[in-house]
Image (tube, rainbow, N blue to C red; front, side, top):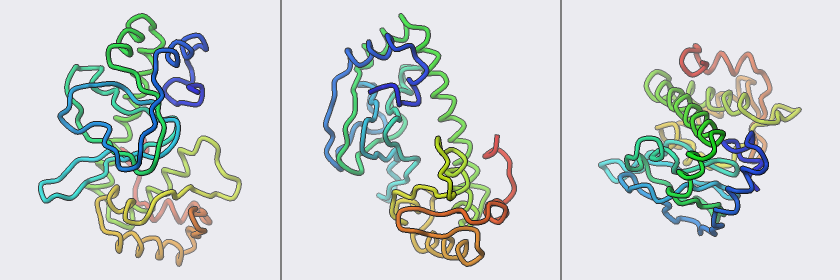
Length: 227
């Protein structure tokens, strides 16, 4: 089960087996809250199926989606590094399944298995890099640039690029708007403009990249997001 998880894929088979033996498989109904910002570390979730949103609740009652997570992702490991509370909340967008490891069990693993500690450090480094991308998207780019860069980044980060340039688009325009810090109407206008310019083509739950150079141009100048 764990061989396809980004955080654990490079671990020796015997270490992955130990993790699976220590973990508890949980069925997580849609809209369930795994933990909230400020909660102490209860455990780490290794996502097997379904989709989750990592978010912060704003003062006006709205939610700001920081990122989404799906199969192969991990949730809740940040407090393992500094002993602090969770910095964001996580909820299931749809019915999901995950392996759960208590913080105590996970600490025993990474203290006894240096390869696990290395994997956690790499995983956290990736999330810090992703956070840099989000800071730039929300503070330095216009909404059309954010949408174009989101598509470009998804295409670039795909583990297996689709031959026709297709990028999975497994969310509503409202979900994407929340992630990019804008409105659904603004996302719809940006997608329509990119399609009109010939940069992309929408096809159901996918976006087809038709002209990579035009998409790059629409995404604006490259800086921290391209590091």
